Length: 180
Length: 337
Image (cartoon, rainbow over all chains, first blue to last red; front, side, top):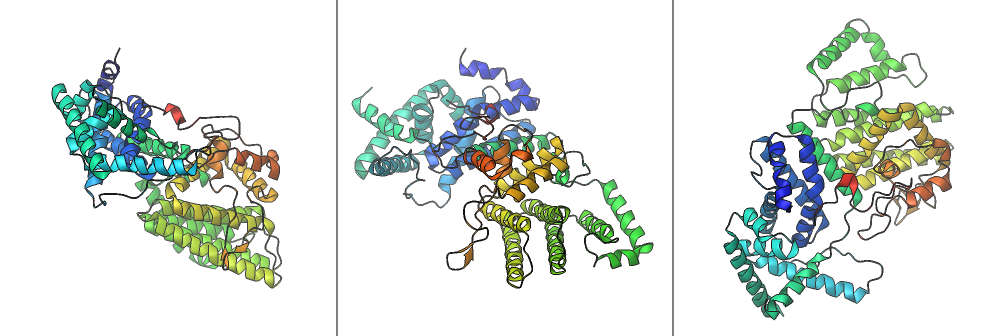
């Protein structure tokens, strides 16, 4: 059974504001949304904020008779994506400084620095992508969603999603060449 | 797939390194989510008021009938016992009229309708508890545990109201100022021969450490207060206070060095072992704490193993009681891919 099929059973309970079903959605996906937020924003605080905002919007949508009609996971990623896009639009410098320091005790300092610089480089390139390309690329190659799920999250046909991913990778390539 | 595409994907994988999530923040995120869900479902997040103030820490909604009872009580005090109520204001712990004084304070707080006013009143009450202790010490009295706990209770009540305002950090800064003033007064008293009881010194130091840490993250304070309230609900106020007093008695909350030690250009530091100790002691499981086991070594060891706040630190979720929740795994919340 695919993830999508498993999620289908939840929808009617969610629409009835069944609290145990809603809680199970939080339990199942809050970590994934955190990772998504962190990958794109490079900050633990922002990633936590992303979780809080995404699930708050989810709750309010359910309460107002909205929320996911068929699939939960793509819906949550769409909410998270919208919030992250809002963050990008706020007056944040094009190239942010280094992200939060994080490393295990065994890492060499120079490796940590290089890793952090490279991560931030990629993050800046992703930020500069057109919104649709960024969403298609990140959901596929970082979050590991199936194209069918991404198509639902983006409300586009699967073919269009594949095209966006291809164009996204090309744009990243160009931007990295320019930067390097 | 082209080679260049694979290269790009490899570069994207750099973003796979995610620092481990702080388990306290996971817990806090879940708590806030559930609270919002219950509110939207039309339920209050409020528990049934009990006798204990600890149980009432989370109570923010008073019913209209409660307000009416409060108003009726204050009217009866003003009409029938007004003189008594006024006279009680200067009473000290142990005086006949002291219970009237605290009753009037409760009424004053009960009549407040907005968080800002509640906070102001609660902070004022906390200062009154301090003044009472100061007078007792001046008079050479030994201040009993009940009065020390009343001081702490008043402070933590102010903290609770403070975090519920729109400007929790501003309110915490006000509490911090008041605590600094109280510390200064007590240290002055020490120089002039008025004793600063060890337990009170430790209490004050702990409160100051809690406030300092909470200014950085008011959400953690809210969780900490909730942990205390849950413990009191589960095991009773007396057991909660027993744990407190044993901790203060044995100095289990101190780090190495002097309490309230003056360091760094005269700035007073608060070397508290763990300002959010209830959260860490209890972890994911509400279990009874044995106050007899709270000698310095035992408790400190427990704290050291309680959790590691560093992003990639070990022992995440280990609350020192053998309940290892694992990283980010509160309530089964370790979802995602």
